[in-house]
Length: 457
Image (cartoon, rainbow, N blue to C red; front, side):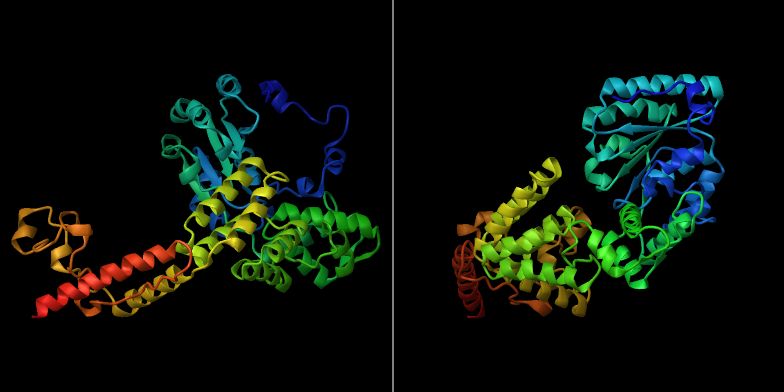
């Protein structure tokens, strides 16, 4: 349970007895020690935090209201929240979306109100993983956010449109943070190596360029991950030494695998998993999944790839494959590791053994090509909507055949623009569920052919 400190506790001198600030920092992991203390030390997100950006001006002028930072892990969401509070001399209160109750929320709000009365300063309530709050917990914030008693800052890796209730979403501004670029990650690592106060400068360590590149690739846009890897490599190398590619690979998780997430082997293993599933081999598919899991691949990235395989390679031959893949993503999201990984394994087996069809994939590509190349062809008059009498008078909807009024709900009317009349994109395979679609299309197309020949006579 979270306990809010008193206003006096928040601003008392931390150096009065005990560890000094510098000594205190030295007890923390490198990623925490190197957290930016001001915007000049913040690498990445230039569009958002640049000196002339609307966000930066709002912070400098103390105009920031409740907001949500949405972006991948390690991109600076928590740091930005802390910098806002520091820049505006406000109180920063971190709050857990996982362990906190509505009672805890109300206690924080009450003490925040007292703090404002005592000091005249704002309280920034920072909720990490705000998408984990349920509806009742999110509702509890609404009146206080609306009244301005607190400034709510949420952080999430999930799309707020789906994870945050609309009432709360309408009262906050959403800022999108991008995955950190390789250049930004290199700047962060070099800064940590050179910093004598909080970083590793006193160790007098140099780093090979290939080792630096490997760290950047392994971090996959996550500053925290890159700094953790640097700290582990530096600790292994020791003072007055060089960090080589071999040393970095040796300390990189279970680093017997060459699997840098921005390099060739990363894509090779993904390709092997995809092609093993497409080829119907559940055993090889499980092996490549195990390789990805052992190498520390993002489990939700794997889930997204499985969803893609379900729609691209199985499609309507087994429509349930998509449901299985989506359920695996939700199961992992709910259970986490290691239990949730079994859902990924089950999905790999299901997809590998499912009947395959890429007919929808091919048909979609053909339709997109025509849409791009032929431009905005007019909608046929008989299938246009006619909500007004004027539209009806000029022919909108005239001659439309309501399918439910016909035997088997089949008509001979044309739904394409005239230039594309009769075009066939979708050619289903006679496998799995698509075999039944073949039967339907044969009946549908034969009926239309028969009715059109009657018209011609």
